[in-house]
Length: 170
Image: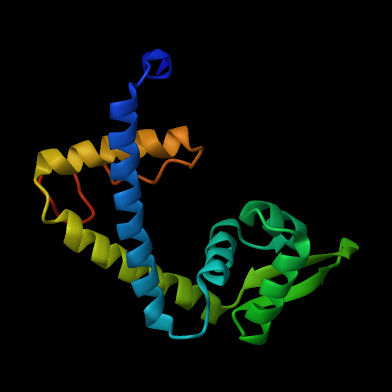
């Protein structure tokens, strides 16, 4: 990795990378928006982010949720209140510290996360299935490097020799 950090990109290379990432992000945002269509007007994209964080972290303190979403506590509280009113999360006082609020997904909240994620996975699968094996491998490497540079945890990988979408090894 030191080579990557020490290598200077010229302005043209950097502009090309930025343009490619912006185009990819537009595609991914469009996929995210379409996948939320499955749940109608029940949740907004920021509310869905909260549901996803709860899905991954389990029961979470409200202040921790605000930090994870990079919003202030009052914003997180309003989001949690709306999701609780919709029956997607449960908010309770922490029995260990009555000044803290804990929240967790309801079964319906988990169902929504699973449904939206499945729609995203299906749409992404359709797109990457149109890529060659070499292009898919390059995409895996590029996205892993991009995610690492951005501080995103590594995505779980399928077992060696198997692809979750049934692709042959490249």
